[in-house]
Each structure stands twice: as structure tokens, then as C-alpha cells.
Image (cartoon, rainbow, N blue to C red; front, top):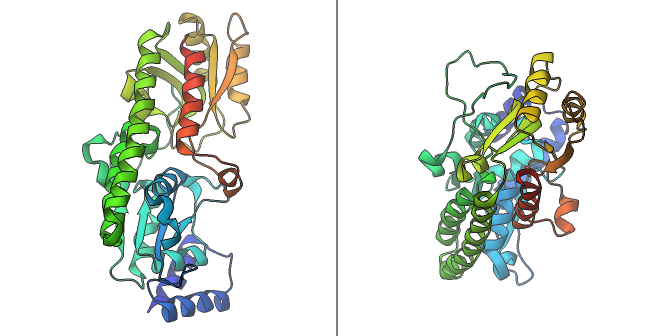
Length: 336
């Protein structure tokens, strides 16, 4: 049955990374080894945790602390792929299938998850949908004045903004929820995980307070993005206004004349001295906006939305808290 499900998922998602023989080998290994498929240096069984995005992966690293050897923690987007275009490989599907804990965002980009879970070998897997966990803390994606709207959905379903991790308050709430799940998985060390989560949440609250302080003293209260805008959760937390070329989940790459004209006009009207872009951007649209302002001297700055963090960056010490601290420094420049 698992073989048929995986093949079905591969066809639906156009997965061509591995041949059928390789897929069957992976499935055979999963079936033979069961739910706890690897051991640490002491010979004790590891628990398997699979995460889709960096933020949740990093929160869990903080929770596990010195007991990380008891876990096999997998970050699926470690090659830097974008959440919105990610399609799992057969190897990733097999990892998910045998996981003890699977954590994913739960937005429109994760539609593939339902099919993946149908073929799960571990029927006792704990699955955490972060959007469901946040409940009424989740915002719908919005189109603000001047923004180039992307295609509406014909099914009429509400489209939620998936970039939930860009709120430090959401991060604190989710860290607490994840520590509880991990404590249920490894009950013997549950108190340890709870303490780690508590300490990390205190760090998140401290950085949140720093954001509040910066915004309360700011000369401006508006951000202007010549790019996609995945930072709605941040702006909602601190009451910051914004304008942008595209919504956070948009796949658009070319801004219309009307969008450019509107944004450059807003930069002039509000006397903004910065135009923002997100990591990985070629900043082309931001530059065109600048060229169409009166002064043409705005500084183009980059904020990190943590959507495509690579394994190499993680090895170099990249962390969620560090990135959010860097974003605060950019915010200081943009609002003063």
C-alpha cells in the first residue's frame, strides 16, 4: 500500500528526483526499520522529528538542547528552496512517513502534506499544523492600497498568510506548544524540554520588548517594500503601516507601471529615506521605485524573512533569534 501511495504522490507532484527502484529501496528500509529508524552513540533508539521550514526547526533545536542526540531532526528545506514552491522528494516522503513528530506550517503551500500523510508507515505519528495551533492569531493574506494583487482563488477558500514565524509572539506560543509535544514523545525528559522552552521564550519576549521600544520612539511608522511582503505578522504586532509591490505569497516578479508610480509617490509623500526588499531579491523593483522618486536617494535595505535558509548557513551559526535581531537593526534604520 505504501508503495502505491508514494508513487501516486510522485506523479501528482511531478517528483522525478529518484527512480522507482530507489523509491522502493527507501520504502523497504522504512518498513524494515519502523518508527524509530536510527540509534545514537549509546545504542538508544532515536525519535524522529521532521520539519518543513527553518524557524520551527530552530525552535525545536533550542527545546532539545543537550538531549538532541536522542532525536533525528530533519529540516526539509535545507537546500534553500522556497516554501511556496517546495515539492518533496521521494526520500523526504519516506522520512515523513516514519517520523514520530511531523511539523509543518499548514498553509496553501502545504497542500501536498495530506497525500504524504495518507501513506504514513508510523500510524502513531504526532502531526503539528502550526496555523491550526495558532488559531485566531493567524491573519488572512491581504492586499493593501497600491499592491499588485495576485490571482484570486476560484474555490472561494480563505487564504491565510503563511509567514507566521515572523511574529516573535507567535514564535513564543509555538515554542511552548512544540515543547509540550516533544515532552509527550519523550516523557522521561519532559521537564527538561519545558525548562529549555521557558528560557528560550524569555529570550523571545526580551527581543519583542526591544521591537516595541524601537517602534515607540520611531520618527516614521510606515515601511515601503519594493518586493513581496511576508512581514504582516510583524507589522500587526507593532502597529506599523506598510505598502508593498506584492503580497507575501505572490508569485509575481514584474510590477506594473501603476504599482511603481504609486509606491514612488508614497515614498515622496511620506518622506521615506529607505526602500526595503527581502533576502535573495535582485532589488530591481526597489531600484525602479527609487529612480521614480523626487530625491532618488533612498537607501535600499534587506529584511530577512527566513524562507530559504540553507544547511550551510545553519552550520555557520545562523539562528532564528539572530535573524530577528538583524531585522530589528534594519527596522531602526527604516523608521528613523
